[in-house]
Length: 178
Image 1 (cartoon, rainbow, N blue to C red):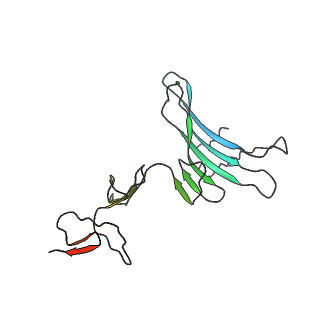
Image 2: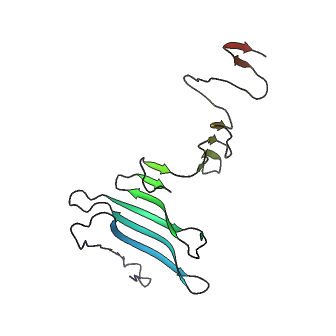
């Protein structure tokens, strides 16, 4: 398909991709795709990315679909780069990042980093599941750089402080020091 408006701003292009089932028994995994390709430095056509619309079931009344986005990763040594699914939006509105079967509204496989619009580090989750707030290299299950406010209970088996100890719990005994 080659679509162009010839720089005419009053023309709106619509491309419709249809997939018609050839057999009433063929239902799962059908769909249509847009494949992006380009030539490399030796004029070989290389696949760069793909957007696919997938129909999980084509039974009338139970059509559930997904939209997937795939990109090319590094060559794994066989001389060919491969398209790998990176993002999926399923028919229930769940989004998977590096996860083709999201079970929650947002499922992320890999590390997660959230930075504010001003560039301040917010939340980071590493591959071991350690969470850093204001810290991208947490060494404990939860590491916070900055002040913490707790409204409610704070339950801890051990409470360790860095610097001067003000309150210590050791073997069921409480110690207070200035």
